[in-house]
Image (cartoon, rainbow, N blue to C red; front, top):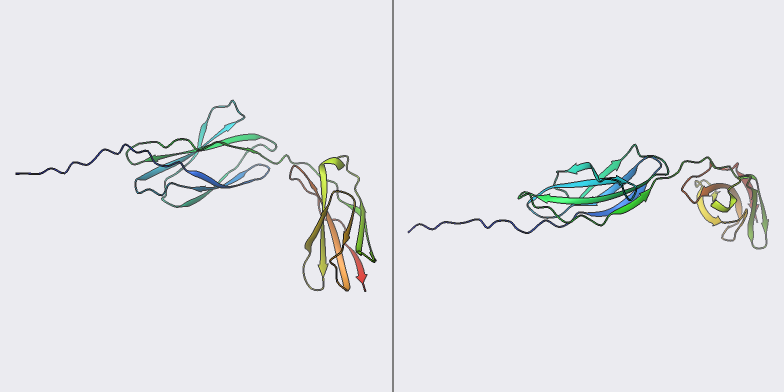
Length: 200
């Protein structure tokens, strides 16, 4: 009597791929994607559409079996809004559900005025810094303060919503400061001219 081994048809679709990390620039977006960890994985496709009513278009197909893949979607428009989703396919042609779509908005490039007339004085409470900002977008910016002490490079020591900052954690010695202006849309200025102060 001959026995036949029948292979069961695959009726279980693969799990969905997952967005793990997304970093957005002015003209590109960098993805870190977790692929399904199943033996019969075939492909995963990244789809994009422009705006909430656009058509979904495939932008990249991943065929390599790997827990994490990285991909950069470039040549996007600054200040544009895009939606992305993922779908996997196994070797039987079964498709996963689409991942939950994510929305990204690329950085809208703008020139940002530099902080000017930076001054530093040592007082009872620490090193007091003041500067001027001449941009017409003062309600859209904040200021990040950097300090260099000894032979160490500049380190971020604080953030301010106004044009003054007191560094209370400063030790005795000579310190150098600079200020950079950041817009809330991700744009930033060049560093200000440095200023030094002697702390006793």
